[in-house]
Image 1 (tube, rainbow, N blue to C red):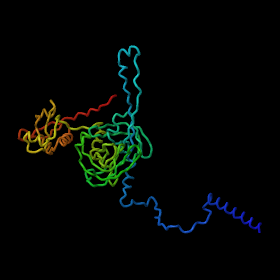
Image 2: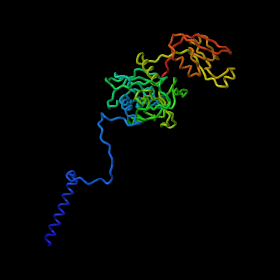
Image 3: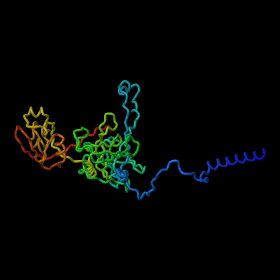
Amino acid sequence: MHRLWLIFAQTVTVAVAILFVVSTLKPEWLPSRGAPVVALQTSAAIPDDEKRSPAGSYREAARAALPSVVHIYTTQKVKQQRHPLFEDPIFRHFFGERPDGPTQRNSGLGSGVIVSPNGYILTNYHVIEAADDIQVGLNDGKTYKARVIGSDPESDLAVLQIKAEKLPTVTFGQAESLRVGDVVLAIGNPFGVGQTVTMGIVSALGRSHLGINTFENFIQTDAAINPGNSGGALIDAEGHLVGINTAIYSRTGGNHGIGFAIPASTARSIMEQIIQSGAVTRGWIGVEAQEITPELAESFGLPDTEGALIAGVMRGSPADTAGIRPGDVLLAVTGKAVKDPQVMLDLIAALKPEEKASFRLRRDRSIVEVEVRIGKRPAMRQERDD
């Protein structure tokens, strides 16, 4: 009896050991278990070529635009200031000339949009401003050195080019058909974390008087735009470019749901001028204007606050030659009403140099029409220590 019990115990021990080894190394050899504890329903696998976007999804729009949005990395050499003691003549007499301080490199991040297969990239001017080296990272991981074709600081736009072919390009949308409430997606490289898509709506159109650029006509959106998104794409629900993300309203540097983008139509016009001639040409007449407040209107005896008050006229300028005087109120340019100085600036800038344009003015309670030969707006001075 004892012998039988010993054989049984050994047999059970060996069987348990074999079961443990098989369940650990080859679990598929074991028979399948019974029914699951909870019955679950699982959707059938769908081939990629038959997949459709779920209702409310914008993945097709993102898929169309993502490859054309790039990361931009910039570096700028900055020399440390020499100690004032090194400039002292007595110090230099005893110790000789001292070398300049070490050179530091400041780095910057931004985004851009490929607009043509031969490597033209649209971005913000402030992304590449004063950069000594510009590197562009594509969606597929490749990196290229970029050169600046031209820039327009007054609209905060710049055009780069990389030496590459058959690049994925963005499709320009009709920004004029954009309406408040339309869904938009912002694509960029926020904080350098990598390509990111955020969703929102068009909150407002034609935003100006923000003090961001000289020429302002922004699309406002609540799609999350953060540092690093500048120069990236704002696209519609079809994946078409409707704006270039430019700025955020924030006191902390983070997103507060108020972002601004330059309309694609404006960006395209400026981009084409930069590619064609390397710069943007705008009209100019040489006046300084200010907004008409109710107090100014009352003191000047004006019937309303419409128009732009001419506060100064540059001597020898087109305005001076045409007889425009300080104290005049500009009411219209080529028949288009001037509501304030910003509108005046935009209307004059849109005129071609050397062409003549009619200006309607209010002077001493009477209406005056003058013809002005438009001049070329001087280039904005770019402050940079070379």
